[in-house]
Image (cartoon, rainbow over all chains, first blue to last red; front, side):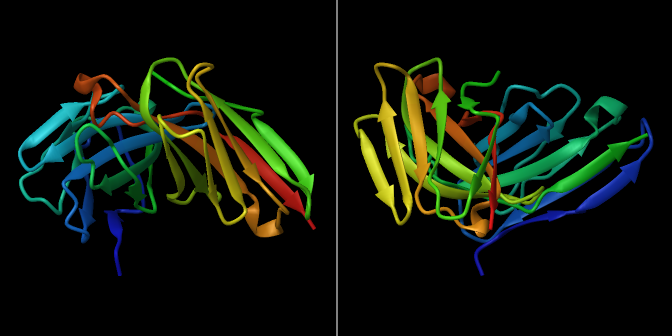
Amino acid sequence: EAQVTQNPRYLITVTGKKLTVTCSQNMNHEYMSWYRQDPGLGLRQIYYSMNVEVTDKGDVPEGYKVSRKEKRNFPLILESPSPNQTSLYFCASGLAEFPNTGELFFGEGSRLTVL
Amino acid sequence: SQQGEEDPQALSIQEGENATMNCSYKTSINNLQWYRQNSGRGLVHLILIRSNEREKHSGRLRVTLDTSKKSSSLLITASRAADTASYFCATDPLETDSWGKLQFGAGTQVVVTP
């Protein structure tokens, strides 16, 4: 089954404790992206990757890191989480052939609470 | 920054009625997409309309795009309770240095009552 898998789905952590949210897709997509969703703000893009070893900042990259060492995986790293990073996080993947970003496939989301 | 803004923020209708929501955006685009999200779950792609298209249909969905007004509309005909969800528009910027920066609006929450 074609899917984007995120883990963990739910996490409660404390300020400053490094954490990683994993994302894996099995559709051989070149493009992957992370979004956060907050009430009233819709989805805001954190980072995206057009291909292996190529990543770029989205609209809200502060406090986050990513890596793209293999095509299928795109982990989101919070080196020192703070309460304002409490949010619902989505990973997405797609084909994205220049110059179009086409249809995205989303994971089920990771709800993160930072105390 | 948010590119698209949906209107209305919330919509409540009865089964069988049509639901219409609008999306306005600010900069030129390659395409505009609509997604559905059921209560806190992952978004599901509904339809993509390219900048050179004016109207597109998919089942009970009809999307229009007016690039001169920088706006799009999504019409769901003969609504069902299962259509209860949030609907988001997403814009794909035309600028080549913005390739990959698909931007979402805040969404329209639709409730369909039996």
